[in-house]
Image (cartoon, rainbow over all chains, first blue to last red; front, side):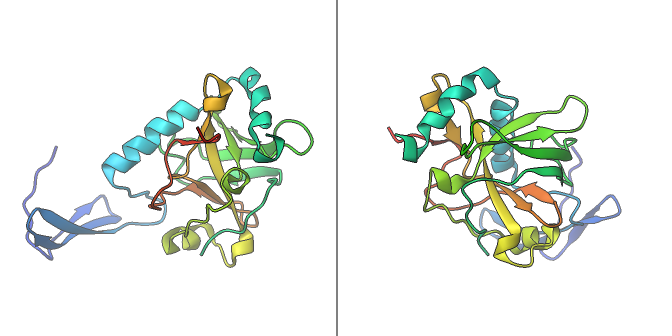
Length: 77
Length: 138
């Protein structure tokens, strides 16, 4: 991991297209601004990891299990 | 802006997820096709790339009529959404064992622009909705 120390209003460039700026520091919270092209997804790490995990759990379901799903529809119960 | 509700998703031959999906960053091309019997609200989001991954999806309002998250401006821009009618909202379903324990991901819905055919899974910080929202209330 590359470790840099920045003050408020200082920035870091990642590659040619991503700029990370420390906006302000208040107590144990740091506000960070990210300038990146639309093609680069930016997320908070812990939420992103949960989303990744859930996508993997949902991926390529066993189709034979799907017959029972339709019966779960609110209008069929 | 919130997406217009729809009970049955259209078939769309090729959707572009520019940054893939979390966990599947290289899965950028998908087909959306209806799954199940006539009148089934479920669709399959089927990956077109090698080792194509598939996801079972459903319009979230079928099971959760009150679900109407605001889609952030960044996503609206990125997908070229000009009006609420452009947008389709899909929830990815995790099939459970037994099937009654299946859940929908209401924290990371998939937003599709039906005209530009661009799509993305977005993070929605709505109070009360779950990453694993049971389809059937206990």
